[in-house]
Amino acid sequence: MKTKLLTLILSIFCSLAAGAQQIDEKTVKKAFAVKGTHRAPFKNATEACLTSVNLQFKLGTRQEQEKRGVGNVITWGFLEGIDDTLMQEITDEYYKMLSEKLKAHGIALSDAYKGTEQYQKLVDNNADLSREVEKKNWGVSKIFTANNAPYIEFPVGMMGAHSSLGNKLKIPVGMVFVTVDFITINQDIKKGVSNLWGERTDKFETSIEPIISVVPTTQGGKMKGDGSYARFAGNNWGFCNPNLIWSLASDVPYAATLKSAEGMPESMKKFKSAVLGDMAAIFSKGLVKSGRGAAENTFLIQADPQAYKKAALNALDKYNDFLISYIKINN
Image 1 (cartoon, rainbow, N blue to C red):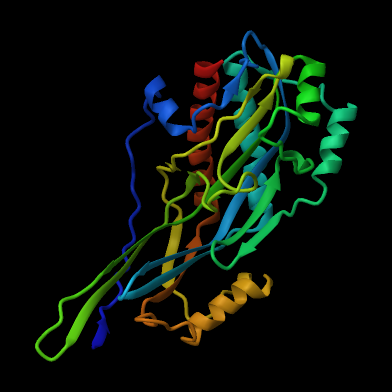
Image 2: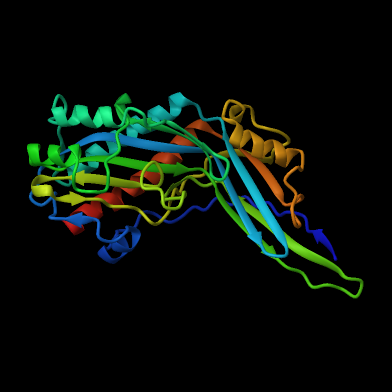
């Protein structure tokens, strides 16, 4: 049986949504994983500490879809035009936005955690966390911390230095981790009908949307370093761990150009062999299996830096609204 691959479809779609809407309790509860609060650490709180505010910026995103007996679609999207300086600027501005929004809701940020034994233990325990992530089945990202602070992750459990610090200070002590993606990839495989000569035309479609989004977990089952969440510990072993399970898209378009890639992007050549090997095989058509080959796609999105910054902060501001609404509703 012969299989013909239809021409891939590339669609560029920038959605301009309506203005921000008030977030009701039902919507907020649906947007976060359940059972994230115990003993309401924010109850009656007028101060809180943020030991680490971390933004993960996706720079390369990979998606694969397979249909048995038909084949695979693999799509890579790469972001160009964004440098480390800009990502640090966005991270620092995000911290200010979050601080101001918390203050507007009656919670001032405190530096009381600095200099404590528990904070130093948190720093030491997280010293080996990597700020660069590359996985051939997922993509490439960089992690930045607000104000160049140490990169800290809290465990989900109640025990540990973070809980001891919350008990010591008797105010919520937390960290925030947010993943910012730059692309939405939609793939579809449809098996065709065979004709009298045994020929079959299958349909492989890929559409990509250059949209900035704050996204939930994309590496299934990973407990830290992916997705968008906050971890707060408070007095009396209380905790508040909102974990976003929805994507929150920006209203602001940012892409200057979008095109199919003809080779490995220069910005990706410094990363490890896992990503390089996958990309090299795609460009050499070396990954063909059961109907694959022409359904391997690589796209480059060239960002307008200032538009990207505006779009990222727009999505992050939406996340702040959801995060603070969650805290108010559940505490």
